[in-house]
Image (tube, rainbow, N blue to C red; front, top):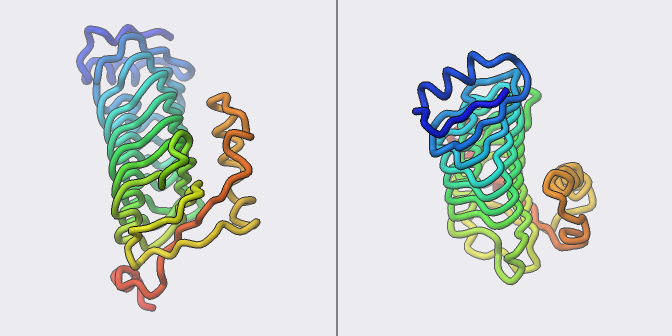
Length: 240
């Protein structure tokens, strides 16, 4: 099904998406409408143009493919499903997601993965091909974030305050540069063979989705960031 979104406001557009039959939907001329695909579970939306904030909020099993860039709060509180961005994304990508996966070909803005959490058997995943802004993984409580740093090999591929308030989950960073300016509640270790085995499916899927050769990413040095058990933040959530 094809929908011309050019002259639709966000309410009309999202009503049209909800009324559409299960299956593929092609949106043409998207111009910043918000909440596209919110809560969908049985549709696959292909977006041509630029979607607005909160793309795929509360996504519950559906698929969203963006043929361009996305704005802020993509995948806000998503529960399941897949979002693929063939460009870069704005701030708070994967905000509070508790399941599903987001793949960003390029860069992500500030606070990517903020408050990401795991839930029962759901392990949310955010893969960023380029660099992330400041506050990456802020207050992360679960799930996996992978930053591949393509195109910024001469510097650390994230900004300031990475992992501030982190108390769960893991952040994998591809970088040959030493990681500096990490807060005390974050431990940085060289990724082990077991760590690399854990993220190989993510890297493989990233390469396949964006037609990027594996040898552009590997072999290379990776770090894994985890919460510091001595962190006072952990005591905010559990007795230890």
